[in-house]
Amino acid sequence: MDSFAPLIAASINAGTPLMLAAFGLLINEKSGVVNLGAEGMMLVAAIVGFATTIHTGSVTVGLMAGACSGMVLAGFFAWLTVWLGTSQVATGLALSLFGTGASAYIGINYVGNSLQNGKFGIPLLQDIPLGTALFKQHPMVYFSMLLCAAIIWFLYRSRAGLILRAVGESPSSAHSLGYNVRLIRLAALLFGGACCGLAGSFLSLVYTPQWVEGMVAGRGWIALALVTFATWRPARVMAGAYLFGGVTILTFYMQGEGVPIASQLLSMLPYLATIVVLVLISRNANWIKLNIPASLGKPFNPNS
Image (tube, rainbow, N blue to C red; front, side):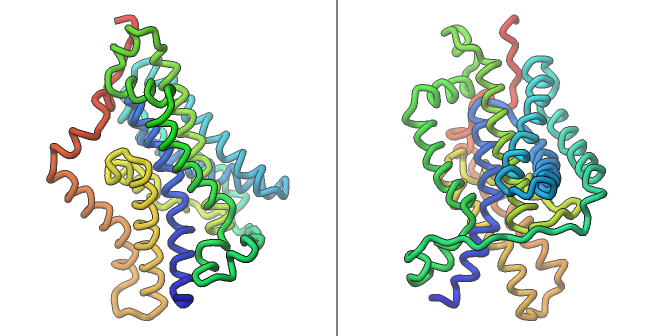
């Protein structure tokens, strides 16, 4: 079993940024808002977190800076879509394009720099079979697991979670009961921005501790697909993230083993898996209708 430990550890590590971003997008969509700007937010957070760590020497501060940058961009997105009523799809795409260009510009002076990762592990547990895979991970990996449990409790066991889901199902009904739909959606978007920011900064500070232009490499889009794949359920998001992380690591493993398949084709596997999953899910329209928030993507104006 220990021979599989490195593959399992790498799969968990690769799935963590997908899971963090998908959790944020899940909360967004539970409130009825679609944010297609995850890719851009993750890219900006990756360079902001990396630059902050370079100048402060603290990975923790870098992760916090990345989360804050994601929240700033999400707040701007909320102002445009929730208050000004712009198209959620168009605004999200614009945010993604903005993040791609802005991160490339900000990161010009940081190309070629790298960081040293510390050694992490839970004493005793890391020495058991498969312990190196499960108990020698970065603290952010365990944080993402705890976040999954917290989101499950929040959505299905707390009054605030019930209100959030009510806003996503029928904002007009929630408004008539006295709830401020705009502020609730703003809070959801800020949380989503923080999660995407943590995901982006995790990539540049932990997963591959360096800055490379475009290093998010489509993970923001995979996270969006992951929410649908999981039918808006946190536990399934976690399982799906590790599944996609495993597919990503499998491509690297196959290349290292000299499998006679073009590396370009192997690099396509995670995205091909995403397309196949979405096609399979779309074949069951009733399954989607039963789980998708009823007001997803629909604007709400309390004054109309």
